[in-house]
Amino acid sequence: MSALLVIDVQNDFCPGGALAVPEGDQIVPGINALMQDAEAVILTQDWHPAAHSSFASQHDGEDPFGMIEMPYGPQVLWPDHCVIGSHGSAFHADLNTDCAEIVVRKGFRRDIDSYSAFFENDHRTPTGLEGYLKTRGITSLTLVGLATDFCVAFSAIDAARLGFDTTVRLDLCRAIDLDGSLARMKSDMVRSGVVLS
Ligand code: VGL
Ligand code: ZN
Image (cartoon, rainbow, N blue to C red; front, top):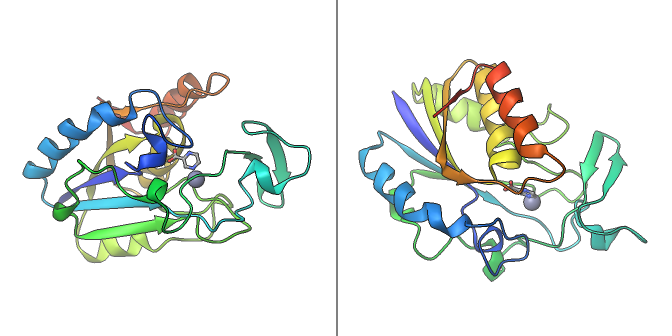
């Protein structure tokens, strides 16, 4: 059985949002269409407390898009985004969320970020999605959403490592592309066995 995994199609990642991904909203109609044919639909939602440690605003003298060292490794600092319950954290109004069988929220612990839908940024703390998929007999995943080079790529690489047949539909993703991150993450995905289509 296969599932469509829709990553973080939220207002803050769309034009006008706090961490807007160029053309982030343009993928919504295509994702809605793909949902109609999917055997199962899973949505993820970036979901941060207001004082989340990935926010540059929480670190004196640091600016958004800088890097810091966290106990679990290097971390990009972001503008405040996807604060729990805010308009920015809501799904894009045109996304057909009715199809979703489960919504996985991530990044809700103040001290650790979570790009991947499977593990937080320590690459150890599970979200529970692996168990959900495996107990449902889902073996194959198609990923779409935002952003290609962060949450989509981290999720796809973890999915492939966990043994799922994993495809990323690049036409239904858009990237932040910070310091060459898109090219780097595309090659990391291919190296991990992710099919880019
Ligand atoms: C994301 C940066 C910070 C994403 C989430 O959805 O790709 N990127 N939080
Ligand atoms: Zn985030």
